[in-house]
Length: 213
Image (tube, rainbow, N blue to C red; front, top):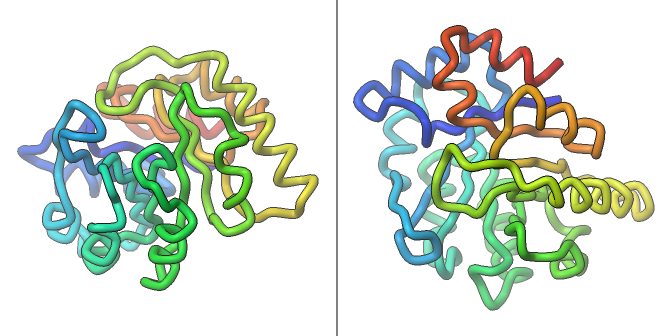
């Protein structure tokens, strides 16, 4: 199990220090949420901020675009240091084209589905992606409660991967803590995204280890 702390929950006044801290305490990926205020009702940092902290670690930058028409920003995000770029199937009219666009930059491609979106919507691109991100809360804000019905999607994605010999990782984002992480692991998740659970914990190494183990 990989753990991807979401720096959306970090202290922005000392973002570099928080990044170094979670890396030293066992983070596998660094999850970076980019929001445009249109696709979701919130704003966060953009490629320039990510670029400013890229030199601090060689850990995988797992970039989640909560952006309308993400195709407009793929090249810039890739050039700013992303290792994985994931886009919402609901945010573009041409998901296959966007996945191709991501791969042309030499970056791994991920597809994201919201709690109200069934797995069937992305079946046609599962052979082409490196990661599938299952949102277990509605996107836009941290600290929300895990939606249990999402576990069925994780199980479905695991079954499809085994049946078709696909190679994507299954990532889960939203309401992840010591309890929900166990349920996600049992359902078939490979990567857990956690923000407030890790950054509000007195011992971040303990928090990361509790999710992984």
